[in-house]
Length: 222
Image 1 (cartoon, one colour):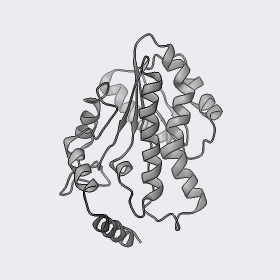
Image 2: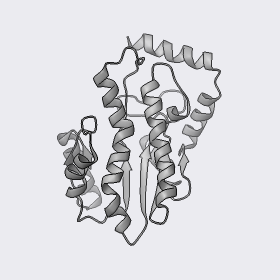
Image 3: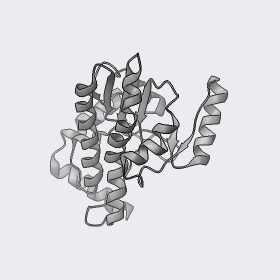
Image 4: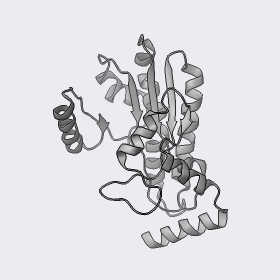
C-alpha cells in the first residue's frame, strides 16, 4: 500500500492482515509532491522489486471544488501530479518489473465519470482524470502482450464522511465489485450499474443545467 498517511495505512494493513492472513507492505509517498520518474523508482519501485505483483491499482485522486482562476498555482500543480502525473510516472517506474512477469498483470486506474464531462469549478480535475484515462487506454495497446490496462471511470461512492443519500451513490463494496467484473474484459467502464446510470444522466444533461448545478455547489461550499 502506497500513500502519504503512514498511520492510516498501518491501521488498514493491520485489519487486512488479521482478516485475510496475508502480509502487507507500507510505502510512504505523497503523490502531490513527487515530480520525476526517478523519484517514483527510488521511493516505490525499488521497494517492491522482490514482490510478485499481479495487480496494480492507481487509486489516488482528488480536487477542491473551485474555478481555475481561484485555485492557486501550487494547488493546480498538486492536482495535476495527483490525478494525471502519478499514474503515468509510477506505471513507467514499475513497467520493467511488470512485463518480466510470466503471467499477465492488471493495471487499473481510478478515473471518474467527471472525465467524460467538462464541469465548471472542476476543470483541473476533469481534464487531469480524462488525460489519465486516455493514457491507460493507449498503454493497453502498447503492452497488451503483458498487461490488462483498465480505466475505472468511477462515480460517487458512499463513505463515512459522505454517507448514502438519494441518487446513484454505491457502497464501497458495490463500487469495487463493479470495477473487478470488467478487468480483463473492458479497457474502460463505469463498473457499477449505479455509476453507469450516473454517467448517462450527467453526460446527457443540458450544459446550462450542469453549469447551474456546479455553480450552486460552488456557492454552497464557499
